[in-house]
Amino acid sequence: MAELFESRWEHQHDFIFEQQAKFSAGMDALRQQTESNERQIATNSGKNEKLAEVCQSLAYHIERLTEAMKQTGDQLNALIEIAE
Image 1 (spheres, rainbow, N blue to C red):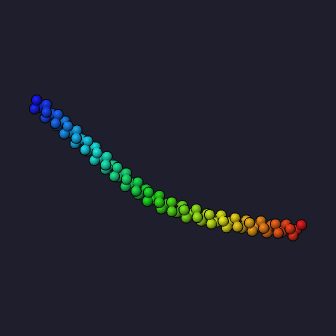
Image 2 (image 1 turned 60 degrees about the horizontal axis):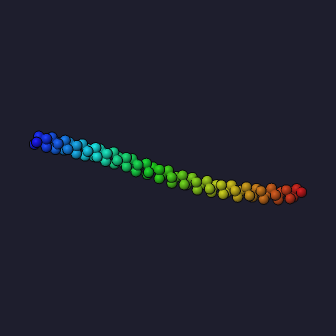
Image 3 (image 1 turned 45 degrees about the vertical axis):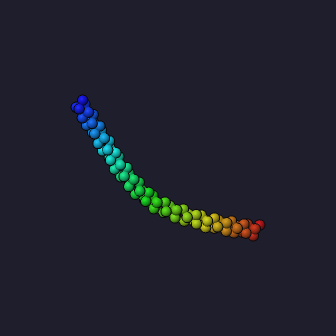
């Protein structure tokens, strides 16, 4: 009976150590993935800021182009009136 108890205890003991080792390895992998994700987020944040700057610049240039096209249209209309 004592041998059976010791055998079960050893088996449970080994099982618990194995589970703790798996848990620890999983936590280490999770920690590494979290660090990697944080670096990627920082990189993406910088890229997003640059993209926002480019979009603002494009919006400014589109606005200027729209104004220039309106002026050109007005000038063409005035020229057409003179020619008629």
